Image (cartoon, rainbow, N blue to C red; front, side, top):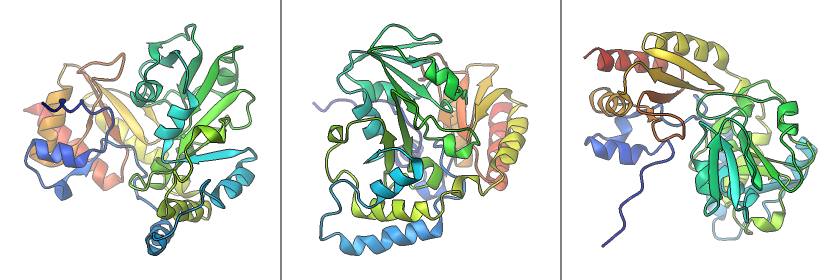
Length: 319
């Protein structure tokens, strides 16, 4: 007998969501994954398409020249990987007890397996600490000084800055004894290509050829559009959407996502009905540690799309 499929711990699984209610995936507007509202820069997609023609030969084992150019830009040695998830796993490999602030991205626990994961507000004894900057799903953004204060002898401090490019906050790159992991998936709208980087980890902890040719070419093109995440008035779009969502409950968040706390435990119902009746997919956040069925997370998209989300939620919650 096959094992049952585990519940999703990540947004963006549009195919699975559409199958739940018999919808065509092409008709689903996805607010469950926090991706750049405009998607990828055209030059990035063009570079990836062109690189497909070279799929008959191996890419660089260590993702050169992107690795060297990115290291030069950041002023720190970089390791590239197949998205942030692979790099997070490498960052906590061998740990037995990992502390993660709650609520936070469930993928941290997935990356830490088989280590024991402790969720809470205060760091507990262990051999690794994982922090989101800004934190998914509530937008908490600790300062560089606050991260530095977490350092302890024998404890790895791992900072996930996958959404930091949507903010003006400085990075923790260069902070001694701190691993920084980030993803170009979110900030450059390329989740299907899978590309991330990290500083502070041993290159041998990541397999060779983990970055494929199209992703490598896309990454090189990203360097030419490095300010892409801040070319849109994201803060204004988020503020307007937060005001709209405030009609339905308490709102928190940052970067390109918001966490909505409903007055009643209707999160799973809201997700299903908004998808079925309006073609709008939100993230049921009830399986985040510290949250429950009152919580829903949504991405910040374009103003017209955000209006469609607000209208779908209003219709769903009023019925």
